[in-house]
Image (cartoon, rainbow, N blue to C red; front, side, top):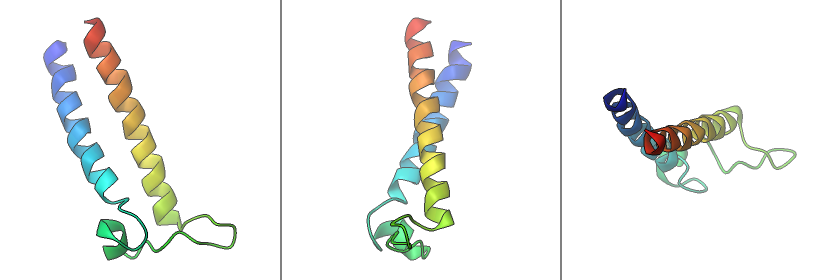
Length: 74
């Protein structure tokens, strides 16, 4: 079980690094390259792509933290 969780931890960490790199600020980094934009909509929100990127990043952050806590408890 510990080996499976450790492999999952490595996979989630690499995925999380990639997701965070896509958030590199306004029109910079990978987010600007994919045309995500500056995130200034009519109400100050971003595009659907930016919001989905935020949701996926938060989801994998939670998975990473929970997996870390489970690995510590084992």
